[in-house]
Length: 361
Image 1 (tube, rainbow, N blue to C red):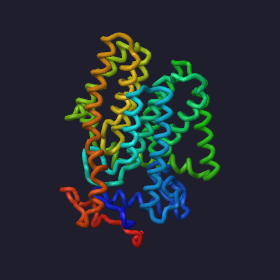
Image 2 (tube, helix red, strand yellow):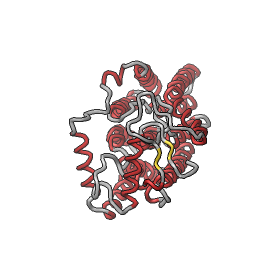
Image 3 (cartoon, rainbow, N blue to C red):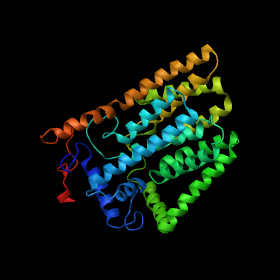
Image 4 (cartoon, rainbow, N blue to C red):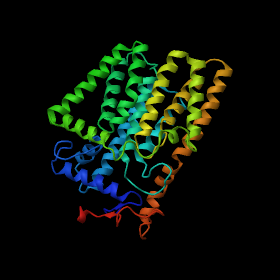
């Protein structure tokens, strides 16, 4: 980005869409009110609010702010719930999801679909807050406020992530009798919804209308992969099997109640994966953090060994999933310094051209 241009190798049309939305908001237009947006508006509002000289600068500043927010929330989760291994692992996962410049299974540089990666980062935080009990006394109220805030961010980023995990989160709080946290969560969530309503009364009705149109549109009932292939196709079958083994180990170690809400969470994870393009099973990141926590807390050599073996297996699947993303991040700076033509993927560009200069914005 050195000279003010945005280097794009993949999904240039989607990247142009991101820039267009940022420009509209910077011009004073309200998403879901002044123009149709079939996604949550939070990522775009964050970028536009930074007031960058160009949409590229605004986007990057917004991404830096979002990354900082994820790290702060990740540190809170580490301090209240995690150990010396699971804590750093969580932070690494959050950094990759927040900063990556490519999509899973592809190493080409692209800022498209960033909202999906942000949603997985938020979902990872939300799952840790909802399903892992706090080890600290006197933090339940703040825990609830943060959980409600993360749920609001999920709602205003991609609603499928919010809907997918909400039932399991409510069931977990109810069965653990965490009423104080639940009340503070609902309170903080309702407060943020009210703030947005006061800013623009038409925002929420417009959001519902836009999402309803997208959900009922026959052009794309799902994100492009069948449910059977999602569960048992190719490498995805390995993720399904390791999830099944995970639930069996949870049942043997933690009992039926914890297995119940994690099983419902599994249905939510697959719903989210089914409804999002690039159907990557990022839920494996949460399973890994959960397994590492149990490996450090469980008593008995046999059970601890089981959780350790499962943790190693889950880390392997995490590595397979995120290797292209890390490679894309490492290569980004090197590719930006090359004074060569943009190299499109073998199937060709979606549109002609892949540079967006400030003068053209």
